Length: 539
Image 1 (cartoon, rainbow, N blue to C red):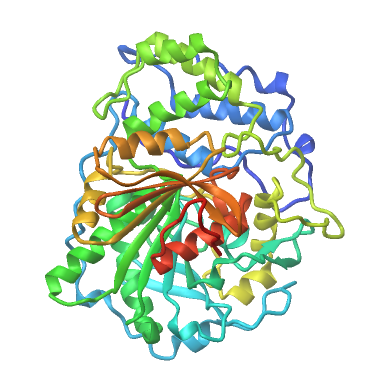
Image 2: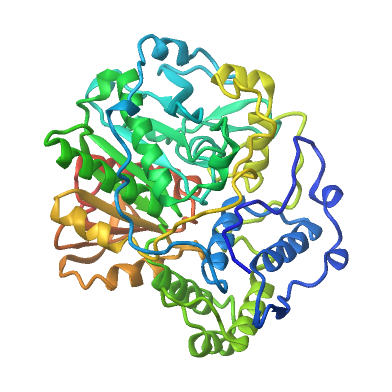
C-alpha cells in the first residue's frame, strides 16, 4: 500500500450558522481517539488518515473546532513516515522548466484588478487589488492574489512583501490576510469587516498569494494538476506568478522585495527564494530584487522539529514524563524512517488523547466551541476570536464578496476553503531546508526566523533545535528585545546574520495573537535594525 499525503480537511463545513453541537456528533458516537494497530499487507502500522479523522470527529463531537492548518500539517507528517511512502524527501533543487515564455502580456490588467470596496468594509486610504495571474497557459492554471498598498503617503519608498501560508494546501487569504497581518478582519456576523490597527501594510506593500492551484480561489482547468502538487511545482509556479505580477505592477520591479510566511511556508519561502537567486544568477542580472526572508514557527527540519514538539509537550505538562521517555526511547524521527515501533505508536496515541481538547497552535488560548454567526458583530478585542476561521469561511463564500475581490470568475465546483479539499496528494517534501538557509547566509541575504512561544505544533524548542543543528557561531548572545518599553520576546543573532527571535505570549499565528508586537518585529526586519536589548526603547 502506497502512502501519500492526503491534505483534505476532516470537517465538511458549509456556509451555515449551525453550532458545533448541531453540526457534529457526540463524543461517544465519534468513537475513541486511540489509533489501533491495523494489519496492512505484511506490516503493522498506524493508518494516518484514520487516526487524524478519529481525533477530528471526537473534537467536533465535543464542540471543538480546530484550525485546518493543523490538520493539513499533521496529514503530511504522518504520510511521510508511513510505510512505503511515495513522498520524495530529497534535497530541493530549483525547477528547470521556467523560461521567458512563462511571462504573458499584462497590459491593462492592473486597472481591472483594483478593488473599489469590499462588502462591509470600513473606510481606508490605501489602494487594494485582487485578481488572477496565469502561471500555465496550456493547462489553464491561475493563481489568485490579494494586494494591499502601504497605508502611508510615502508608499513609493516602502518595500514589497510577499506573505505565504503553509499547510501545505492552506490559503494566505484565509489566514495571513483576514486573520493575521492584513488590514481587515471578519466580524462575527460573517458580513462586515473591522480594521486591524497593526496591519503589516503600515510597514510595506503586502502581497498575499493563494498557491498552489486548488488552494482558495486558485484553480486549474486540468484536474490532473491537483494530483501533481508538491514543493518543487509550488516553487516553480510561485516564481512564474511573481514574474508576471511584476509585469502587471512594473512600479515594484526595482523595489526591495522580501518573502515572509509561517508554518509549512518554512518550505515555501526558502524554496522560492532559492529559485529567485538561481534565476538571477543564470540571467546574470537582477530579475527580482530579493533582499531577505522572514519565517515564523516554521517547518525547517523534520527530525528536530518533531523531537522539539514532543519536548515542548513534556516541558509544558501536556504529556507525562513516562510517555515522553517512551517516545524518546522507541520513536525514530530520522529522515529515512518509514516505520515506527508498536511502543512508539502506543505513546503517540496517548499524546493524541492529551492534546485533543486544547488548541496546540496556542496552548493557553480558548478553543472555538460553537461555529455560529451572530446577527450583530460581537465587540472585538485585539486578540483573535477563536472562531475567526469560520467567520472568514462564510464571508469568502458570499457572491458579493467574490465579485468585489474579482475572484471565482470561472465558478468553481467547490466552496472556497481555508485549506484545500481539492488537493489530495503531495508529491515531494524535503526532510530539511537547512542547506538553503546556509546558502542564503553565504549570499548575504537577510534571514530572520521568529517563533511564538505558546505554539506547541512547531514550537520554539523545535526551531531552537533546528538552528542549533547548524552549529553557527553566535554574534549577539541571547537577550530580551523590547518594543515600546515592553519585552516583546527574546533574540539571538548568529554569524552570517541569521536572527532568531521569540514573541512572548504568541501562538503559531503570531500576528493573530500579538499584532502590535508582530508589527514591531516585521518593521525591524524590513529596515534591518537589530532587535535591541533592555538598554533601548524600540518602536
